[in-house]
Length: 258
Image (cartoon, rainbow, N blue to C red; front, top):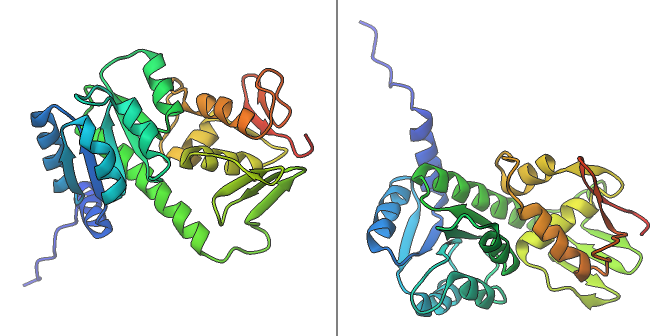
């Protein structure tokens, strides 16, 4: 008799094993307790370690003290709203922040990105979509940390200089005229991607996939918002940019000699 073979694992089962091994810690800041608990159950069933904070006021201290791998932050909270929390924790917390908003107004999404959020999702959000976004953000963060720790070959420099602008991947910092530039983690990732491809036009699709690990849906404005935030920080003219140029219908070009 032929021995029975173990049935093949489904993709979802393999993903679950993969996530269990990662042991990522997620903090959900959400005042809807039932929604937060349901979300926690789903994420934990997929291998994540999840904790919940239902009030805005203690959220800042929890994020600073616990340093979770990722924060899922609701926009509308009692005590202190998500925008304020995001702005206050950014100097002390470099991990990814996904902001949830029940509104469809672009202004909320833009404000969230300006306060330092890495991604945003409109509510109601499907648990599977949230899980996919969390995984994409955490994988990207893990790759960044690994790249910083690894020795990089001569073909892949860790420091780039363009006149008075210096961008250093190993330190994840940038300087303009020897003065440190205040960049969020997401802003640095975008600046490094553009500057390391200086002289080549990168499409929004390329940028989105490289930074977020998911396909560009044609609607997301986060790349445009971040470019507009980075330009003045690196001494670029927001109206007539010299360093990061918008190439109509194509994408963005970082100019080698600005």
